[in-house]
Every structure is written in structure tokens, then in C-alpha cells.
Amino acid sequence: MKKLLVLGGGTAGTMVVNKLHKKLPASEWKITVVDQDNTHIYQPGLLLLPFGVYKVEELVKERNHFFPKNVDFIQAEIAKIDPDASTVSLKDGRTLEYDYLVIASGTSPRPDQTPGMDDPKEWRKSIFDFFTLEGSKALGEALSTWQGGRLVVHITEMPIKCPVAPLEFAFLADAYFEEHKMRDKVEIVYVTPLEGAFTKPVCSKQLGYMLDDRKISLEPDFMIEHIDQERKVMVSMDEREIPFDLLVTVPLNMGADFIGASGMGDELNYVPVDKQTFLSRKYPNVFALGDASDIPASKAGSVAHFAIDLFSENFVEYIAGRPMVHNFDGHANCFIESGHGKGLLIDFNYQTEPLPGMFPIPVIGPLPLLKESHLNHLGKLAFRWVYWNLLLRGRPIPIPSLMSMSGKRPVKVEAKITL
Amino acid sequence: MPVVEMIGKPIHINEEGFLTEYNEWDPAIGKVLAEQIGVEMTDEHWKIINFLREDFKTEGETATSRRVQTVGGVPVKIQFELFPKKPAKKMAYIAGLPKPKGCV
Image (tube, rainbow over all chains, first blue to last red; front, side, top):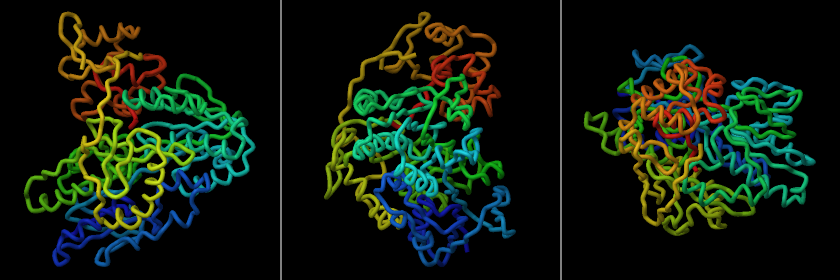
């Protein structure tokens, strides 16, 4: 019996086992998934939960509910991988052997990595994260009683899970306070370590108005050094200060600690892989999929989905000793909520930045690209059903794995040096 | 993509002036790029630029400020002193590598 071991039962890990159990004969392959808990969270919902769009129970299901019957699920914490011996040791003392390993342990917010961020005095009282269930819930409670003041939306450092989420949060907050008739009591500031809210030429040109129209002010090039909780200010590496009444931050994101402990990660515990096949650049029987890898694509569910469609084709070839020919192009396809029941759709890859046009999609489409529309917001809401019922279970979705230029309109951007 | 002339050589750049061809760069070009954005190069500056060039060769991506700190050995605070206000972008510009970017 050959052993395929999958570390992590989140979006990527669940899709992988559902795809591969259909392709690998059960008489020859034993598939095992390890995760530290049995709670699968619909993560796109964490952005909307604080604004009362969802209830917690709509966003949470048991992980093992989504694994095929002949896949083993071990609920345990992972201590370390020994890639030379092809074993994984668990914190309860067990050791698991593998012939092939898929690392799908994702990325996690790490407020402990910024001095002063998660000190108990203000953490989840006036300083919030939203990509955890606890953080998102606490933020919802805080927003529902907040009387106004200075709301700062902040990104610590790239890369982060769902790179557009903080921008969406700022848009949704603007709409939320307007709908609650208190927008005039709230100042919204968007703080980023990048040069702006938009860094790609076509997006800057097409979407630059979105912050100005909403009176959201921008603090670019802000690399945080620490938070002074007493004074409620963020302090940057070059000693700029940003005061806040309510801080919604995306803490530093890192891959799992056991990857670092195993000597298999980069400076943020992401596993270096080939960006087209996800094969480890060091170990020939190790792959990393989803947010756990270091590929230069967005850490997003759509990327994991397209990647795994291609990976599952490749894996069958690879174990038979044939070359992997289904190369991933970095395709991402994401809705961006912009508030007041509208949203944008972006579709891009490693080479092509998001472009305007119409995105062809059967039944509900075509959907407008890089443009606010109600239809895109409906698409985002409908996606929760698609996620639980089709995507996780490895069922087909009518969007091609590789990006297509069909419907896209190239845009000419004037040359300018901004340094 | 525009082509400009720098110290007598044709150089391919993108719409923001960043070099697009890794092999068209050499230290003399780097010096010209630094002058364009008001950075006077010292050994400390070159240490970072050389690290970025080498790292890009193996990784295929421009090193982040964190990577310059943990792998290249230059703390982020020092990067801000050497390349004021926008170290990541300025370092990439002078090294002839792609700038750091988000997804939109």
C-alpha cells in the first residue's frame, strides 16, 4: 500500500483529498489527512461577519464531513516533518510514514510578531484582526456599539491571506457607517506597507477613485515597528506615528511553525516550491499547495482551487514516472466587495494584471470585470453555496483552471516614474 | 514597453521606469538609477543591491524587506535609513528588479 499524507484539512487539503481519492485506486493507496482541529471555517465569510451579513453557524462545519469515507482523518497537532526519513511526528508521540507528502497547512495571522499588538489591554478591545473566527466575532460586537472616532485599517506586511480583504473591509465599513447614519462621526484611514492601495498600473488607473469617493484617507509605505497601546498609536520603522480609536489590522501572516521547525520553510515558514507544479524545490516526494507554499500568487481560495485541479492531473503522471505537463499560471479569480450591495470581479495570473471587460461564465454571467456592479455582489453571496457543495468536494465549477483573455480589454497606461 | 538609453546602452523599462530585463543591468546602470532617485551609493547600499541581484537569480522574485533582513542580514530600520521612505521600492528600482506589489 502506498501512503499519501496530507497535512492540513482546510480549503486546499480538503480539495486535494477529494480530487485524488477518485484518481488513486483504493486498493493501492491509503490517503490520510492530519489537522489539529475538526472545524472548517468558510473564510471569505469572516470579512462579512462583523457587519452582520452572516451568523457564525453559517460559516462553520466539521472538517471530517467533507472527507471521502476511505480517507483517514487524524486530529492531532503536528510536531515536525523529517523529509529525509519521509516521516511526520505528531505532538502526541505518534509517527506517520509517507511515500508522498502534501503540505496544505495554510497561513495564519501572527499578532505576536509585532511588539505591542496583542498585549491584553487593548487586543480585541480596540485592536482587532478579522481572519480568525474569534477576532471577527469580537470586531462585530465592537462595531455594533461603537460611537465613532478614528478607524484605522492596516496591513502589517505582505504576503497576506486574501490581499484585497483589508481594502474590502474599508469599503464595507464606509457603507456600514453610512447606513447607520454615523459616517460623519467616523474617520477612515487605510494604512499599507505598499506604495498605495492599488499597485498595478491598470488597477490604479481604473480604481484610484474608490478611496477618494469614500473619503478614505491613505497612509502608504508604512512599515510598522510596534504599537504603543497606552497612547493608542502605531509607530513605523521610520518613526511615523498613526493614532487610532479602533484599529482593524491584518497581522503578519506566517506558515505553520512545524514547517520552520522542520527546516523546510523560508523566512515566513512558506515552503519553497516550483511555481508551476508545486513540487518542493528540495524534496522529490513533497508538494505544498494552497497558502502554505511560496508561489508568488495571491493567497486565496480560487488560486488553491485552480492549482489543485492541475496538480491532481500532474500527480497521477508524476507517480507513474512521467513528466508533469499541467503547468499552473498563477490564475486567481476574486470578488471584491465594495459596499452598498456592490462588488467587483478580478481575474488575473502571474503575467497578466487584472483588466476590465466582461468575464464569461455560464448561467449567471457574463460578469463585469474591474467594475462595481450588483451582479458581482450576488456572485460573492452565491459563492458560499458553491464553496460548501461543489468546490470543497472537488466537483467541477465552470471556470477554467488557466486564465483566459476571453472578454478582457487591455488598457493603455501612460508611463510615469513615481519614485 | 519603452526602451531608453543609459550610458550608451539600450535598456528596456516598464511604465514606471523599472528595468524589465535582468541581464541588461550592471553596477554602472545601478549607479545611474540610484542618481535618478537621489540615492548616493555607499558600500552598505551595494551590499543590499548585490544581495537582491543574487537572491533574484535563485528565487525568481524580488526579496522583501523582511528577507533582506533575515537572509541578507540588513535590519529593516537600516534599510529605511539607507533608502528613505520607500526602501523596498527604491532597492528594487536600483537593482533593476520588479517592484513589490499587491494583487490589485
